[in-house]
Length: 243
Image (tube, rainbow, N blue to C red; front, side):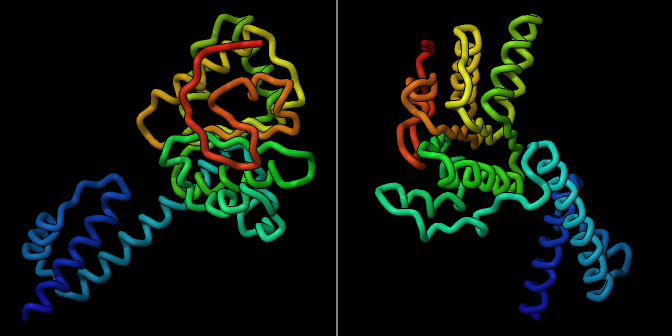
């Protein structure tokens, strides 16, 4: 009898969790009351769980699909950690790179900088990290540094800087690719560091990823938010500065 009672309580709890995933508040106690009033037996409750489980999974897949679409990451032949050969990585950052799939930097609210010569997989790792964030339910946004520069420039010229900065603060994972391939003027640099500062003020999990071939001649290298390495977590806070 005790085992049956525990099994029923676990079933009520599972249905309640599935309902919560659908945005429906249904406590185990309320479900138990419904079962009593509706003369639901074990079979009916199991069927109810199957329906709620299916709907919860369907909603989850829809949410993940939307996150991936809005992220601007590649949808065809996406970059994944499974598709990256970690075995070819050598040096002091090899261990750090292999821990990327755990998303520890996201939850520790630390930034990442992928810096090195072309063709070593910086963009692959950045996009794979962003995709993993989406699959975990976190909003991600990917753009190239030239796109970021143009976005900030347009915002500065149109007087819509607050909106532009807010759109870059909101994603849990912000990826700026090919940082070393464009030049930022003072206004754009100031806006970028406004983004960095405001992201650091967020209490929820977040991280920013920068990739660059040339860490010595762009604003990324002058910021405490990044560091010259292949992949290393760093502190997020930064003082506003420009070159």
